[in-house]
Length: 277
Length: 313
Image (tube, each protein chain N blue to C red):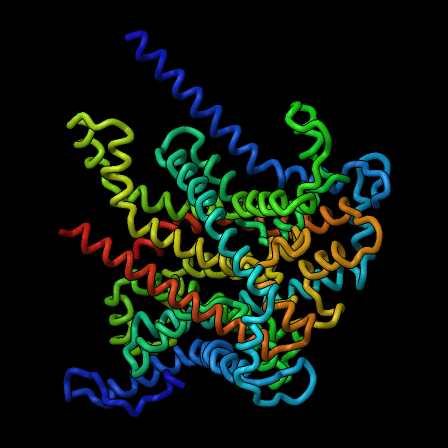
């Protein structure tokens, strides 16, 4: 009896020791980046004492941090808004209407996941040139939106399908149009899906590096990730790692905060809902 | 576009309301129209265009000229491409094994509800909220000799005797650093997907196995693995595809080095296009990659289906 309790306690102790060590290992790089950006580093923007010197230096790097932040915010806003609107309308159409080409269109949207992104980026570079959208934040946001559509449309279709049809049928009998049904009745029921789609569109567009690297050519339109990578690669002589980590902090903090705020209700719901559905 | 084609025969079951049904079809098509336009213009058109471009000498600036099959023939003669294919395959095999093992291990660790498990899940997933380029930059500093804490920590523990250049020291160190970065960034995400599969297995199955005297390992091989089949397949397909298309970690962390030893296939495509200004050649490599991935996915799905049939019988 006592032996059983002992071994139980031992097993529980080793479980918590292992998991805590692993958790520290996973969190350590994030904590280190924050610490390295404010700690004293000789030759950096913060040579002595703790402070925000590296962030001040980052403010004045290249076109200036405000320019890059502005570009990133514009790209993220356009991508999130566009993805949410298009996938909501599309999800509503796929869940509630039958129309010619419906299944084909849904397959085409899912096929985006099957095609490697470099296969698309090279022709997109040429195509955006023809459309006068090369080197444009709007063109970039449209491309990022396209990459978000498979996931977003899938989630929104499932969200609408989870709402009983009787709800909209009753409203229709009362004379509501399909758009009123969507905005007044259904939108409330799919808000978990909306937040999930918006969150993932933000995380993807805020942090994307490859798409703007290829589609944006002038430095004053670079989003923050491209600007920080350029800072890393275009330095002659020694790289200022501390300022680099300050850039990492500016990039990472909004993502981590948003994720922590929204994860409890929504991300868990998405994980259990979408993958089983 | 696909969705605006309303002249096709109606599927309305009753004759009584054909006009209402046709109207309803038009409304549905209208709601789907924005998605259809995005998919048409930014996905289907580029898909055709990449094929068209691969048939041409297509400079970054200037007029394209038809040159089939020069772009495809040049791929075979490009030594960088052959090396990149070999490296990318090697990387894919190693990273898939390591990442899958880590993610499955973490998923088993956070499978049961007990005190603190939510915190562990969040800690493991949190790197996944940070962008991959951001994570690559973070590791570039973390592993650096100037600022990074890795060398001092390992030296203090007596594991290393002198500082190591993790990113540029040797081909193997650069590969190992990239794999460390990828596991850190993606293990938690894959853990969540695998966890989802684990939790879909009914508890009574384990209960019954325990009553029959099955040990932990027997339960794992006889219940967990077979019932996780489709989830494991999904995770593996995503991992393999993602690894074959690896770019950020090598472009940012190792810069393809040392001596091009970590140059991946996608890096070759980007170099052809924007360092050698040869879009036609980049398009041809893209088409080859697309064809290879489609073949691979078809193969994986077939193996999966055959396995399913085998499992049923």
